[in-house]
Each structure stands twice: as C-alpha cells, then as structure tokens.
Amino acid sequence: MTKIKTKSVGKRTGLVAAQGHAVLTDLVALKAMTVPELREKWAGIFDAPAPNTSRQNLELRLGYRIQELALGGIGRDTRRTLDALAAEVASGEPGQMVSDPRRPMPGTKLVREWNGVEHTVTVLTKGFEWQGRRYKSLSGAARAITGANWNGWKFFGFTPRPRISK
Image 1 (spheres, one colour):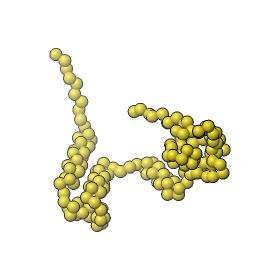
Image 2: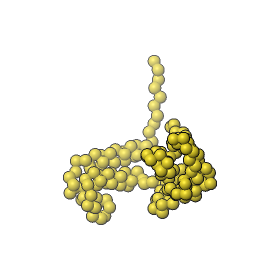
Image 3: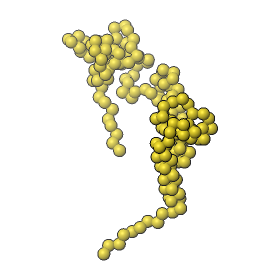
Image 4: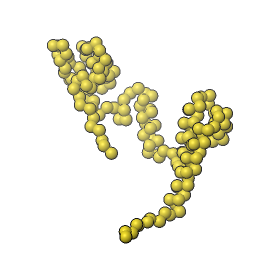
C-alpha cells in the first residue's frame, strides 16, 4: 500500500481561492445582466455614469475592473513601461521601446538585386533612403523598388527574430 502525501493549505491560500471564486462568480454574472444592469454596475464600481458603448465593451471593462479590485492591478514597473511605450507611439518617433532590434545602424547600405538591377537602400536615423527618396519603413522602400507590397525585412534578407519558447 502506498502512502499519499498531503499538503496542508494555509489560511492565505484558502483566502485567495475564495477570493478567486468570488471574482469568477462576479464575472459569470456579467453575462446574465441586461445593458441597464451593466450600466448600474458600472456606476457602482467607477462612481461615474457608464460610457455610451457596446454591451461587449461594458462587460470587458467591468470584468477587468472587478479582477483589478479583487486581485490587484498592474505593477508600478509595468505601468512605467506602458507609459513610456505610449509616449513613443504618440510622438511617432521610435525610441528604445519601439525600435526594432533587427534595424541596422544608420549609414548601413542594404543591397538587393531585383530583376537584374542592383538596388542600394541607406539606413537613416529616421527611415530609409533609396534613389534620393526617403521612406518611413523598409517595406516602403521595397514597395518602391518592386511595385508590390513586400515585408521589407524579408525583401532584404533579414532573418526573423528567434522565438523564445516557454
């Protein structure tokens, strides 16, 4: 006969499980609510009138907020990262958060033969240059060369970033 080892569950683990169950119950209840009930729930949670939006959006945002209140929101470091990313996207200038690690150093010459003609694209600080014209993306330059939509990285032979398996 084999013995089975059991692990005792502390008060904290039981509390988290109960809290998780309560959150799950609240989330399931959202699906059964009418739109006026969702709006009422919104007013109770956010202390503000619900936005004029779809039922699905109300459910998603209420569901996120319910989980956030019960289980905690995103951490300070994550918030800073998201704020920095949003600032870069809003400015339209790629910075450390948005820049593509495949991107070569400014001044690099990318050479590709297409239909028997050698084409050279120069990497700029902001964009790319081909035949004296500037392009925001490498795909734009590849489109100008070929007349078709291309992934610029593939057109110039860059390999995809290796996937990190978890």
